Image (cartoon, rainbow, N blue to C red; front, side):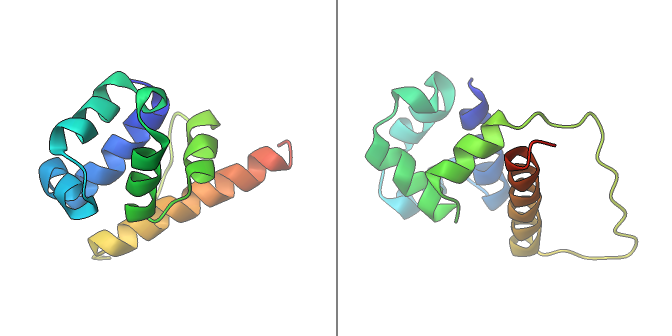
Length: 107
């Protein structure tokens, strides 16, 4: 599985069922599974765009997220905080944004 497919898999799995996600965006579940297992580069651009839009990211953001090296450890303390699934997704998008900004600045 390529890095882009790993990212999409993680984001989709946080939402729940892959089958339900595929049906929600109007692609066959087998097509989504193929994209995630064979790699995003082998999928049709239309399907990649549908998946990204449903996840509220752009294809460009997906590419940037895939190119960024993950630090070995990210420490975050949420002592007593209860985050909704939507808030956790927003935090992930923000982290990706900060990483992409860092990469563009050459740090």
